[in-house]
Image (cartoon, rainbow, N blue to C red; front, side):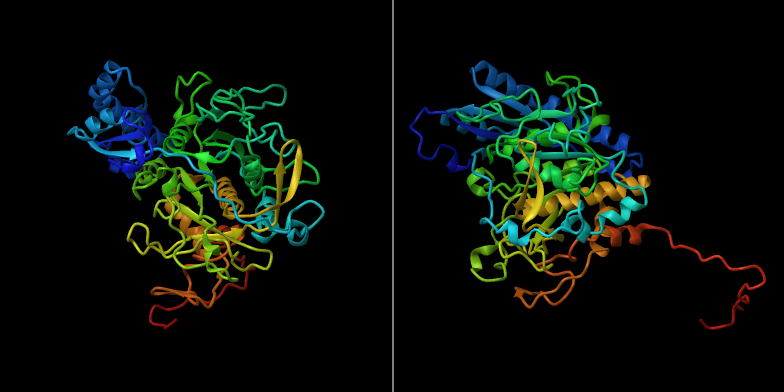
Length: 491
């Protein structure tokens, strides 16, 4: 049992913790299911069935003791609020594999950047960062993310912001319905939170989520083309209380994105789930992610359902105190997971932001090369409540939505690719603009591609598109066909 759960608490005082069961669902068969709707449904039903079958004795014991708990299914676990005696009893059970902390901590943000100096407009309406990753090239072909559902797991968002209202799936042009389009995982908000607890409609308690949503899909139909995929549909889940998250809140939002529910939390619909989820947050040890594996199965199971999960790399790179980040600063869950598409931040000059966390990953002993990609994340302009825009949003939080939007663009361009996360990630990586730097961390040289600073390079969605598009044949005029090559001829 994690000793941090009851650190500083008196005997008999209650705390929140997670009880992870030993029996977890086997999703290996999901990879062989070609239809993405069927694959999503299979994953959802397999996870729910395993949780229902194995949690019953534990739920009965907790109910008998009058203990508050919330069951989860994406990972077979329960969120429990009780004292040390109950926690020790649960940790000793044969059907329990771990009792983990569920603490809260503030969202990591980089130091303020001079947005007036850094924000550069590519044109009167398209922001420099959107143009830099060549999203408008796909727009010109008619691919704007249509048919793709983008989920934003964050501090919420202002759904009726001019740049988001038409993108919010709950708005039909005349009225709003938040069933299946919004979920609030904050059930115990701190005093003074402007959204309170269990907000029935989308609400942003700190502006962060509105900014990330804006970068992914924002467009007001006029002079504010701030988002990468302005044709995609937007749904959301609040997983932080003014920036404070917990492993349970994060897991709850992922469950909802896999199978959204109505406003009462009933009648789940996997067919209405997110296709790609933006996660501009990390879960440090101070937030309860004291085990490197605590959210690993959450991320892996969502990806197994054919949902792309994009994560910010984190803003801890600036510990070196110079123009380059410090080595191996991607150390927070879930950014270092292999199943996460991890994104670092670059500036206007296309070089790595000093705050951007980089690899290789030491936290889980893998020495894994991260980030996977980088994207603009310094002084970008995005939506800001109420109904405004801010030009100084910086951090890997700002970089990640660019990749989220890029996934939506590619899946609208290639519908048969939707749900194939592996192939999509490979296209994004191989289509990126290679970036190198004279910095060696461990065995990884920054002068090679991929590297531990930029990953495969800076996002270029047009480059990814060209990797996926079939080769174009050039018509040959009649009477000018090339001679047939004989088998014996060498190329």
